[in-house]
Amino acid sequence: MRHLLLLAMLAAVGGCAAATETSQPAPADASPEPERAVLDGMGPIVRGTDDAAAPAAAAVNRPPAPAAPAAATIQVDEKTRTVHIPVRLTGARGVVEWLLAAGDRHKASAVLVTDRSAGEVAAAMARVGLAPGVRPEPVGEDRATIPQGSTLTVTVIVKDAAGRPTRIPAGRLLSRQSGGEPLSEGRWVYAGPQVVLEADAEINVTELSGSLATTNLRDASALIYWVPAPGGRMAGDEAAPFVLTYYPSNLSLPEKTESCDLEIRPAGGP
Image 1 (tube, rainbow, N blue to C red):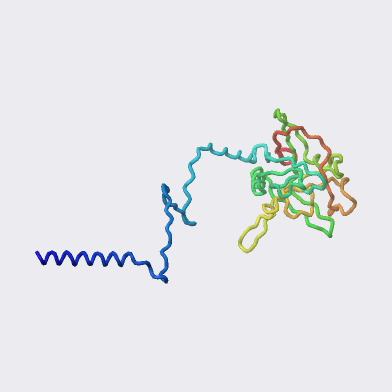
Image 2: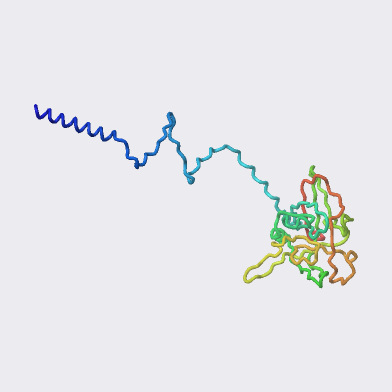
């Protein structure tokens, strides 16, 4: 019994000593613990990292975009040896060098442009039996030889909003004066594409230049050349006339044009 009382007294003394140590103030040089703010009723704030993936956007039901209309293609009638090329009137003013150019690169100096390439046009010409001719050659600074090849009949077919066609000889879209009278005499000559050999490869220069039907005899890459009648050329060597300047003519065209084609066939029919 006496031993039990002694143990109880020792435990009480130890507990008081521990309590005394715990209640002692902290030394002056001890660093205070950082304060922790407690926000009642609020959960922890979570911040994402910079490289965290953004949540996927909700799928939106949208109707599919309408498909772009297919560009009109070249029509070939091998029986009548006729080629129809879809073209657009440019409304160009001032000096023009092309009746027809491929693409919009020469739009400012062409009467007509087409979305079809020079290669496509040349392939269509081959299908109706047109063989390449002899290209013009520059002579001096302002002349060129006359190209040799098949003579063509080239007609612009314009349809109005009601589908009524108007057929116009292509030369009448050109004039020797700005806004002047249409040309009356001359001919279109087919020379074919200009192809050069580079190492073992063939390069279609006409495909690169986009020159389809030109009024410039010094253009080395055109498919078709306008050759004015002898009376329409300036004085000079008839075999190498001066290169002339042309403009769009004052010819009236149907308003609200719905479509426009350039019809090409050998002169004199099949």
